[in-house]
Length: 136
Image (cartoon, rainbow, N blue to C red; front, side, top):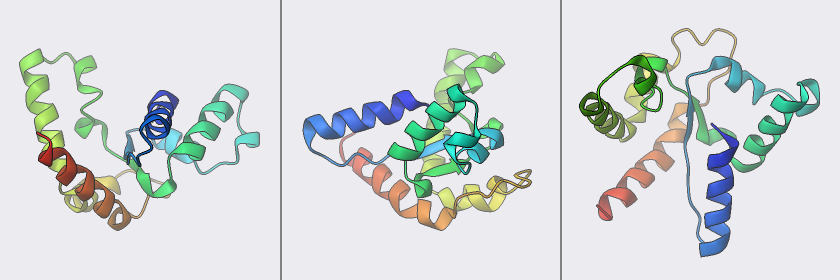
């Protein structure tokens, strides 16, 4: 959930005059809790990031994902390039079934952080996957 990705989405959408949907998955409950906090209550650096993300990524497109399912983070855990390809493909396949992720993982260990209603994620995820499969 970096500001860079939401800037890219905003810029591409403006250039091409198209609506580009994103799903922002984070394995950090702390970062997700910041998204529910008014920016003025946070330190300046965090506040600036939170403001950009909340401005550009709707709440229904932000979701918790356990670290072990975070394909963006697995390389730092010492896997090979071939294993990385397998994990990315598996993560891509899981994106087509967000409710399964929700049922088995999302609410584990989330403590006081309110997670996004995953049923609202299903529609944009399925639409994204369907669109990308058409172009592959």
